[in-house]
Length: 352
Ligand SMILES: Cc1cc2nc3c(=O)[nH]c(=O)nc-3n(C[C@H](O)[C@H](O)[C@H](O)COP(=O)(O)OP(=O)(O)OC[C@H]3O[C@@H](n4cnc5c(N)ncnc54)[C@H](O)[C@@H]3O)c2cc1C
Image 1: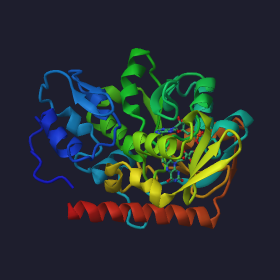
Image 2 (image 1 turned 180 degrees about the horizontal axis):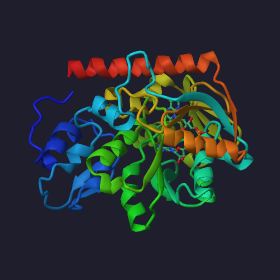
Image 3 (image 1 turned 135 degrees about the vertical axis):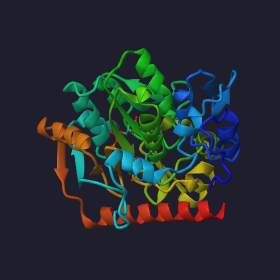
């Protein structure tokens, strides 16, 4: 995907700008902003240089789209490379689960597993905060990073917003707030970014206890999908939307009970360009990965690491989750989505 990159570790922001941002490969994760030791990068609908770059090259080390480093990162997280037959990455256990808390279920996207795991970890002292995503109070459905430190905040942040939330920039907020045990929730590209920070700049991620990755076929431009299409073209007031979901179509559930839909073909016009270069559907580097994959009210859950098992078992022991074996069909869909996304990314990388 990126050719002729400089080999020196002393790279400047131009290297990132020319190879990632200008080529529309940026995923809006905010990792470069979070990691810049000179604090000369800011995130304002994209990364901007606002001071003198000291050529440290750290922004390129943490960017999930600057060199792929998949094997290196698998070795870092799991101590080995993914085998070819491990279609959706290395894992210890797969299951489907659902929260036992009605408040969580009312607000969550699928089975509320993500929010339940975070609350359970918070209440048992495994963490004292979590980087999740909230909605901008002045721009409905615009996701913003959020450092949640209470169960109420975690419940308020539950549900899915299908636009990028630059979660990595909240790492600095956690440090400032003195949080020393945090969880991080994000899409596969964001999980890759935080793993790169963990590997290349460990002091910035020393408070990270575990990560929860969200399955992701693709992400959508907020201005394109939510503003141009849904608000301006369909005439839907974004404040009237209760939930959006993708089940073969882009579904818009209104607070009135009415459901409007956009064909997936139409919605895909607003996909973030960099998503087509991403080969990771199920957040293969996370401690736990969660997705809906066609389920109704349950979350497909992949436990990948010992830390993930500890967090999940803690919630089950506390009676906070109902757990079942996944049926054949969601696993088949997971395999299909994973293979499809990986092969599209490989193909495009070779072509570019
Ligand atoms: C952009 C995006 C695309 C997705 N695509 C798929 C898909 O193709 N197939 C599939 O099976 N599942 C997909 N998911 C995952 C799915 O929507 C649910 O997040 C997952 O099933 C967990 O459900 P839950 O009820 O357990 O989570 P909940 O308990 O509802 O918690 C969800 C968590 O996600 C956080 N969050 C919400 N929006 C964002 C965002 N934009 N960026 C980062 N964090 C966010 C919330 O703050 C909350 O912490 C996608 C999620 C996102 C954010």
